[in-house]
Image 1 (spheres, rainbow, N blue to C red):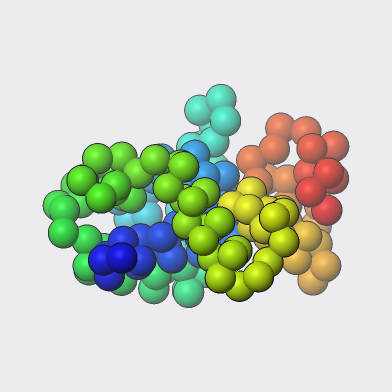
Image 2: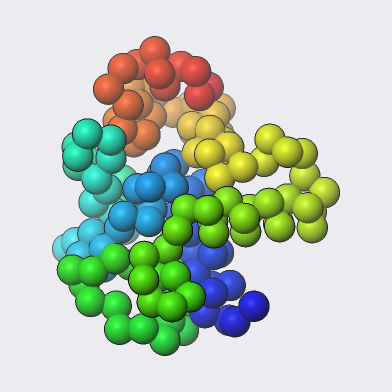
Length: 151
């Protein structure tokens, strides 16, 4: 595996867990979504085209920076941040396949999926005293009952 692809995959998975993003949200990010005045926040477009601001952990910012540094393609701020091997949009199946490879290498259960990283984000926030309404906003859920399923 090429170093830039490993860096890309690591950055995507780190975002899924560290910011609670859906795969489609992570893969829909543009450089401009990260280039807000305060670079510790992402502008995420979720289901129904709704936009929200989500905090980004320093480890995720470092992973994205490393991917950007190694990526052989020009990353236009208005274009997609995460690229496939040939420079086009990154297919969600690639993220799922990478997670399956990691799951196998680490002997994790079949339930360890990209979406499970999103669940873990919510569960860990709640376990550390996070407010359910705030978690709802971070996840982009319209209904609190949907967030309660995650916790």
